[in-house]
Length: 296
Image (tube, rainbow, N blue to C red; front, side, top):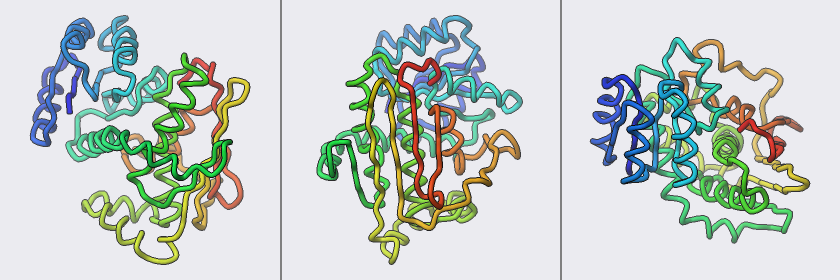
């Protein structure tokens, strides 16, 4: 996997290289947007880490150029811990995710694995067609996390066909986070604290595999129904779990919430969509995005 890190501080670029090269990444670095754009002339990275505002006016051109040359590349903002508000700003400007500095290798590697999984599963998109129930379009699929990137990619392609000028990185991340929550917290009923402990112990994948073999979890499915009408994207995602009290959602901007990889899904989804409406017992959510909106 090719990675480009753009940051004024050489120590941050060194930390990226030391953490990612041992796991098979080819890491290039740049200290400015001009230098990064020169790198793009020779090679397109699958992942771009960039420090918001460090590149001045060139930062926007860097992001725009990356999207034009390789729209499937992942853009991740690097934000200082004392400037957490920049994380939200970066997401709205086009970043697909964020990491707080100083870099923590477990968080960085978890982020890279998500991107690697998304890339590897694009070729599985054809499998999604087998799960289409009716043209609206409705998709039902088992609680298999490996199918999530393919389901999202299928939806994003349909969005791009209807609104070719729409920036889809935010939609992609919001959908992916919501579907992962539907599987992990919904159908498999893995609690927030339970997932946090499993992440810390490195046993989350084992926990998910074990839960998928047990009843009543093993037979549960996720239902996704979406449509694009009059420039608006509607998507309803429903799991078969017991639900949760959505009236007591935690605020990620407090209690060090932005530092957590676990639990940020609802926050990211609300950032990227115009409306996020939970229904029934919390196991059904409606997402609405006006495709001509400038915020993405």
